[in-house]
Image 1 (cartoon, one colour):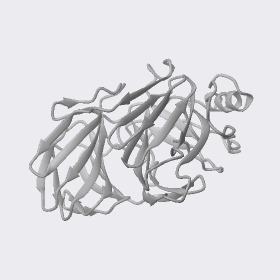
Image 2: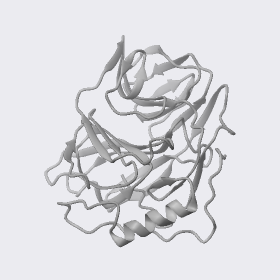
Image 3: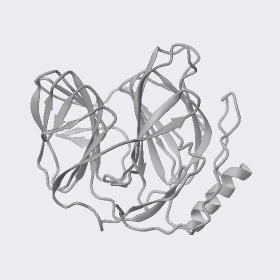
Length: 321
């Protein structure tokens, strides 16, 4: 999914300077962003209070939206570099096309994982004949320097490992949770899991103390370590935890995002993650000139133009609050 903000500003992320090395309970409120004509998203990362959680650098949550009489998601071809996109649905379908030739319909609880590497472009749209509701999340993972120039690729995993307990069913999108490991390619120590809870469930999930974590609420009423987290909001948990207490006041669903704190300093601007202003400027120029990022074939419409770069220098920094 693209960042469609026409006034895109740089997000200065990474580094360990502001990693919270102990358990905390920091509630993050979303910023509402219009994505195309009929989809509004709630943006949790980057946030004024938190730029990254592990290598997770971007989190949009959307829906459930009634799109029975609407076109639904319509995101024209746009570029990415230096990151992975993670498409995750609870309801609806998204048709993915990209410049490597991939054409894939992503359905609920299936993983659409695109590794941009040095350069890729893609589009996302609701199929012409689509389900009534659209509900899901779009997330980005920053690639470390050793892998950010890799060849672009797309993965689709319809079958994913699960962790189960009374009243709990967790699907592992990325990384490892309690011994269940996702088949999706990961380039840093990371975890992403979708957790459904039956009403009245009170349970604890094992965590890795060296990871920092956040919990994104997708639906229902759930208390995370005693804190009520409403749908469309996220609770940042810091590091140093060995378990995650969860209590569902109703049938509920949350996403657990975590990973080893990201060492490197980086710049995230529009749909690019780089390390220097020159990299970002070159990526924008390449996209606008139609080079490097390839062509998305089959989308009914033109590519998305890049916004204007800000007049101030883009400088990589550590984690800032």
